[in-house]
Image (cartoon, rainbow, N blue to C red; front, side, top):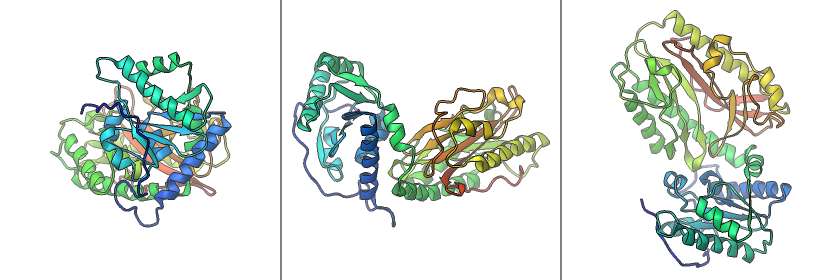
Amino acid sequence: MGSMRTRSAGGGGKGPRAASRGSAPEGIDLGRLRRERLGRLQAAMRAHGAEACLFFNQGNVRYATGSSIMTVYSMSAFVRCALVPVEGAPILFEHPGSMHLSRRIVEDVRPMRAWEWTDDPAGEAAGCMSEILGALRERGVTSKRLFVDALGTPAYLALGREGVQVADPGRIVLDAREVKTPEEIRIMEHNAAIGMKMLGAFERAMEPGVRERELLAVITDTLLREGGEYLITRACVSGPHTNPWSLEAGDRALQAGDLVFVDTDAVGYEGYFIDVSRTFLCGDAAATPAQRELYRIAHDWLSGATRALEAGITLRDLAERMPRLPARFLPQRYEVMAHCSGLADEGPSIGYPQDMQPNGARLLREGMVVCLEVYVGESGGLEGVKLEDQVLVTPRGARVMIPYPFCAALL
């Protein structure tokens, strides 16, 4: 898809406040969802002394405005962005052909002037940044420091010529998004039901002769039919493809006795993540002792990690409290023991005790949605097991949000 160019600098219009994809499920208030998210974001901006943020990351754009258009395309091209002042409503610079859609939920929508794939990217980017800076002046923002999450080189240079100091909003976004609002949790509960259906469809379709990519098609079909959006990986693999851990389904046909695992890695309704992993045994063959051992170690780790979650503890202390993975599996350990989930795979995260703690001083807090995940497979081994649960931190510990049964044949 090519970008649409425009030199228009027209202002945003006010349109009806409706859901972008039809009516919301019962019990979910999308208006409240968007107000509360914007409130959390602007509170974090005030805490960090930010007068304005400019977001090209589509998760951040959605968090701030509620609007999501052509998400996968927009993640790879600078075609839409959100300008968020510390006070007042955000301004959405939108792909011109999609403005009528975003105006259903965003008050101020203006055409985005694209600079990629032009013969004069420097000039087009300068024009785009000039319009954005003009919008800031309209809102009374005088600071020469602008917090920007992603920016192409032509636009970065254009801001520099205007004397703008570009700053990183990473800490702002992390502070805002780490604890979920009540409406976010309701949506994630809705998506949890979709995750249960995806895993059920996967397990029913799993039989000797079925190819990995066909299983990928099964979970994608379920996701889309249930109102979800897309997968971020292709993690449906089998047999020798399970060691080392792989995210890429191929054309391998399953065989009886294979270990088969799936990581849903799915963006569900309203963009919220469905992230759970299960490993199954294919066909009627009996599990081998080696397969049972791998599965038991992974299952015991996941159960112990879930019990370890307690609101109020630092993530560094939590890393020390988590179960220990046997040494022979450490060389192929998963990249983290846990990460948060929301409008994406999110932080904060928890590394293994011997690894760097990217968020060690942060507290585990009520309202966080945490994905606990473990991979158990020896270097050079024939197979491996991947398990993951998405859990909600509550005053009474962690509650598994997608309680899909574990594989009885392997337990």
